[in-house]
Image (cartoon, rainbow, N blue to C red; front, side, top):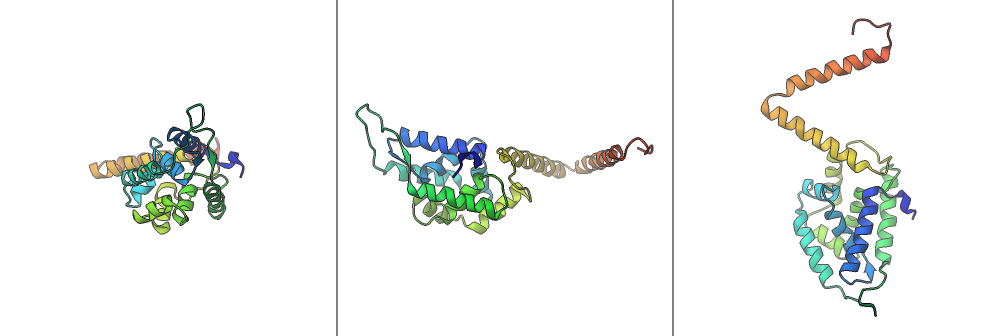
Length: 207
């Protein structure tokens, strides 16, 4: 798989997974390292989507850390663990994530595709942990629809767009609760009318 087809956040997670494996003295980078890295991303999509699915990301993280602590540690003659390599399991998961991207008609492999592949993974601890925590494919897809709507992943940084939309949605909800939504809607309608008028050219003078 071409790593350039991964979004920036997905690439960051893979590098963080490698660092985590090295830190813990593991010779292999596995799915559990990757999921832990995804949950550790500040303001990341994985944590947000799990919360929207009714799953406690902190509990998943704790179980992952306990699982990784039981993995065998390897030390080289220089005192480190040596160069870590990707397991066959993780490689298969990346291929599955690529398939998920194709199914959603996305151009890049993003965090959500990795999560969808993990939910379907029955061969290791990561899939077992998320499934036992109550995460299902249906719940995950429903949460993703809330976050990304009908958008497709057409750039290497789609998560920034998701976050902006989520902040915008939260702001509208807050304004509605305060009873201040009508002026905002009115201003938006005026802007849309002006923009349409602007697109119509200088012949339209009733703007």
